Amino acid sequence: MGNKLGWIIAGSIMLVLVVAICWVIFLPPHSDPTADTTKEGALDLKTVEVPVTAVLGSEPKGGGNAADDYKKAVAMVTDPATMELVGKVEIAVTAAASPDAATKKEPIPDDGLAVMRKIAAAVAEGASKGEMSYPYATVEVTYKIPEAYYMSQVSQSLSILAYYYQFVEKKPAEAEKVLHDRFAMGYHMTRDRV
Image 1 (cartoon, rainbow, N blue to C red):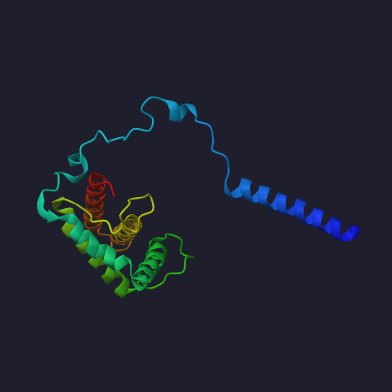
Image 2: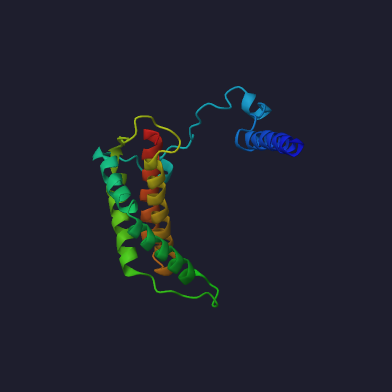
C-alpha cells in the first residue's frame, strides 16, 4: 500500500512539473515595454518620404485593377509543380552565375524559365495600372493571410528571373525591367495594405 501511495505522489508531482514546464515554454509571460516602444509615435504607421517617381520614373496610371493581373501570377505560384520548377531554376541560375569553377553547373530548365516569364508578364501588366484593390478570400485580415505569402512567392520568382537576366544572359536592361515591375507591385501592395 505504501509503495502505491508513493507512486501516486510521485506521479502527481511529475504531472505538476510537466504542466509548469509546458506553461513556461508555450505560454511565456509578456515582456515589459521598452524605451523604444513607449516613445511617442513609435508604433505609428511610417511612410517613405521619397516619392515613388524617384524609382519608377512616373506613378503607374493605367486603367483597370492591377490585382486582376497579380492574381494570375499568384495562381501560377500556388501550383506546387510551378514552385518546384522555380526552385530548380533558382539552383541552376545560382550555380551558373557562380564565379567558382568548382561549382557544379546544372542546365537551366527551359520550362521553368517559361513559367517565370509568364509570372513576370502578368506582373508587368499589373505594374502599369494605377490602382489595386485585392479582394481578400478571408473575412478577417491577419498577419498570416495566404494572399500575402503567395505575393511574396511571386516577388521571389521575379528576383530569380532578374538574377538570371543579369548574371547568366548578361542583359541588365531585362533584369531592370523585371525589378521595375516588381517594385511597382510592391508599391501597389503598400497602397492597398496587403
